[in-house]
Length: 452
Image (cartoon, rainbow, N blue to C red):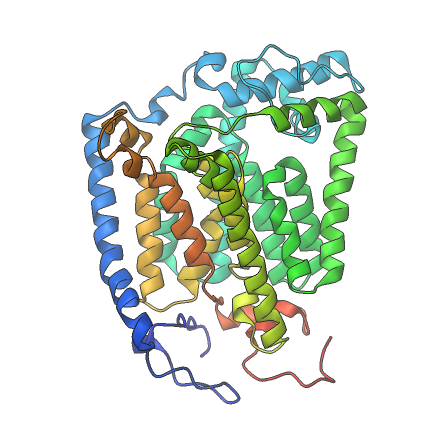
């Protein structure tokens, strides 16, 4: 195969003949796995069609779309997250470095982000708030389009799928909510894509550094730093931990040591979000009338199981053909998804961070493959606007299931990303010989005396 995309494991109808040195794939699904595969293959297009139809009806007859309110100038009411960030950044700029006022601004919401974010957004604190919000919104759109576009180009998924992915993201509820509220997910997405690209270029420590800085901005993504440890890649692991610690301490040093304790106290006392768009398992447990610890334990088990899965595959496959553990594939995004599932609060808008992983899934499968259908269904579900929850008032028989939609989408995305996936083989020419990313895609076994 030259520029052809490697098909997904588990699509026997589209598996190519193995190349020299490659083990032959199984002839078909085991009997116990055949019917779930056929069910997913047939059901994914139905889910996608139903989601798009629901979105059209809600846009036509439901609440006004979120984008309608972006021009609003009342930050404290309409753009509440950005108002919180701007207030903190403005306090830092007004009172100078060393101030402890960034968490005591009188904003409508608590700023649950580390001091580093206020330092990074300090330039916006110099601007008039509405102007700052509009500039931040324009930057957010540019970051999302740029990050997703780079991921599509890097994996070589083709023009049709590139437009489908970009169109799905631009039409999605997570992006609209992010822009309306003024959230920082586009910035986090850019950090994740930067690390992923560095990994694909054969620079694992640079990748870990990018991930570490991103985690310093949003600690709920912290499980991502554990992936190299599970794969026994100790240098990238230490680089990621060092980058996260350094960036965090730098933010504390500028904002003032007292801000660290203020932030920690707020994070530890913040309750689990009960609203339906909290996609985390603790949030779902709360909505279902269960103790939130049930969701926390379930999320922790998923996280531990995911890391153990990658550790086992890495130990079993070594450095030969560990496509399922490739840190330049879907593995980082699968771990991010488990961190979101286990977090007390993981808004549906976080789904933006997993889009590059979905792009890798598309690249790992040929036309018509099951995983491409699943990606299309996930993108279609993300288009359903938040007006969905208004259809199911409290006490409605189906309300518990309907309000689990966002958690179900996150779970389906995690499960899909857990599948072994590889990018196009031609991309290997761009990587430094001997990198783990290249070795993970290598079809031939590597001798013990080979590259390290």
